Image (cartoon, rainbow, N blue to C red):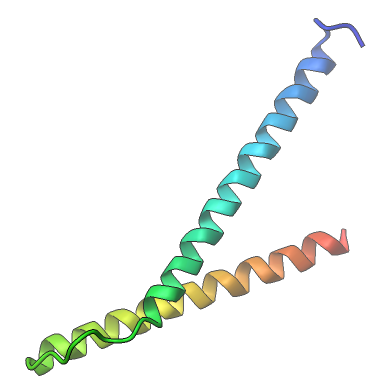
Length: 84
């Protein structure tokens, strides 16, 4: 293939876009794992204010939920890609 051909440019551009997609996937997976880890972190100190304590508990549960959701999504996504 000649260097200036449109097929070479298309192949190079397609490869670049695939690498960007892979990098974004890895970044999102890292984010979901961080959310899950933050949701499972133990409460540091006992907050006397019961409303604040409930909000912290709800926040950790929400972070854990979204972390688990992301893990589940990417695990299933990987399995679907293997089937192609």
